[in-house]
Image (cartoon, rainbow, N blue to C red):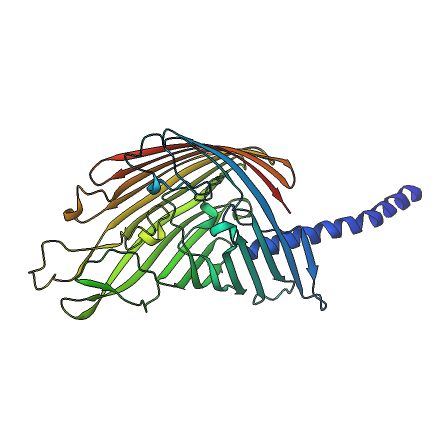
Length: 414
């Protein structure tokens, strides 16, 4: 009996360092992931890490090399990284329906600095860049400082439910995704085990059309997004979020010789549901005015507001802009065959309701997006993927164009 007890004691003593190291590794993974963006394609856990001299901070350095080969057919989008349905040509030139493209500009480097303190109010920092600029020049995707629940810097808008973005090889993702990289001051807070809230002040942008009766002016009122979220399940892996955003956009009314301000509001329902760790359901539904800069497919198309046509002699409406109504949604399913292999399918749509005077034009009316993909971790740091994409653009005059893409991916994480 004594001999058995002695052997057991020696076994426990030998095993204890391994258990402690495993616990430390799990803790480090957790704090690195907590400090990183929540979206699918943002790197979180580094391969290399270094502790500061005082042992209070740890710096992680890592990234990935992502290469893709794609073939567009029956309609083509001349961009190997972003399958943007609004960029689909309507009535394309003959002979331009097929396109072969290679790409590596989504390869990424990141730095993740975390505090090892137990204090709730502790500092962190994160920088992430890819090479999507002209001639593969680096472009900052995220660069921010955290202090407890406070985040200051450049990252995804708090209006975006980043954890609910479905996985795609396509760097753009669903066309109806409300996604905007912005300069922000955000604050997030947890209320008990299941509820959390967030609110932000974010840099305003101008994304509207003007005539001689209006002029674009400097913006001085920040966008104000906010959300409330309820999470449940194992490790709170499922959640539902209700978000809103208030915007106040100013412009110069040249007819009245004064500055006008348009106030807009939009709301969003989003989230994900994990079913026994095998099936994941992603969803988002957004509707409102003044949010085209936040909708991926129409951002930059100047569709937030339009000049009023035929109302120049109306004293109350002269020189004013009229807003559009926007609807954007997606729904996606992911099935996990095992921890290393999964597939997903996502459908998305955007619908822009312009003022009646612009009906029948070649302006964007609606877009459709379908993605089906398969991912496999051949090694812990080697990921392979294949994806089919379909997109369709419809104009206000009901003319339309479509595109199809097959692509494969090889990604090495380091």
